[in-house]
Length: 86
Image 1 (cartoon, rainbow, N blue to C red):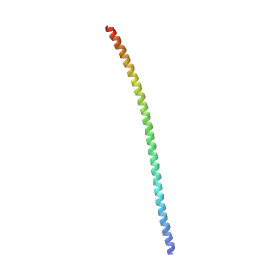
Image 2 (cartoon, rainbow, N blue to C red; image 1 turned 90 degrees about the horizontal axis):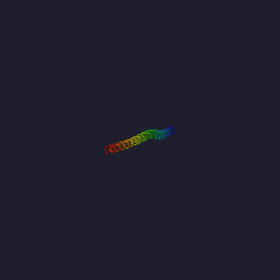
Image 3 (cartoon, rainbow, N blue to C red; image 1 turned 90 degrees about the vertical axis):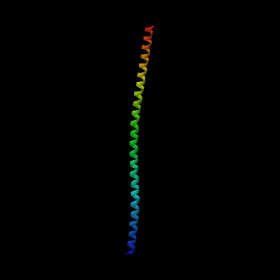
Image 4 (cartoon, helix red, strand yellow; image 1 turned 180 degrees about the vertical axis):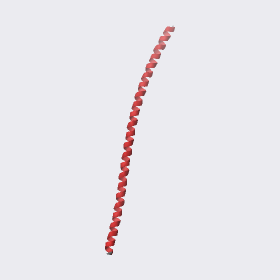
């Protein structure tokens, strides 16, 4: 009878240890899943920002081209005006 109680106590102790190990493993798994989700969100955000940067660069390039055209036209008109003045 006493031996059986000791065996059951030992089994209970072993099961508690196993439960603790499983809890820790589960927590690590959950943390890992959250880390992967966070990484996925950051990659998605990074890709969104890359697209925005590309759009801004294209707009800037277009604006610079337009500015160059305006400066060229201004120079041409200024030169034409100076020729008329002389």
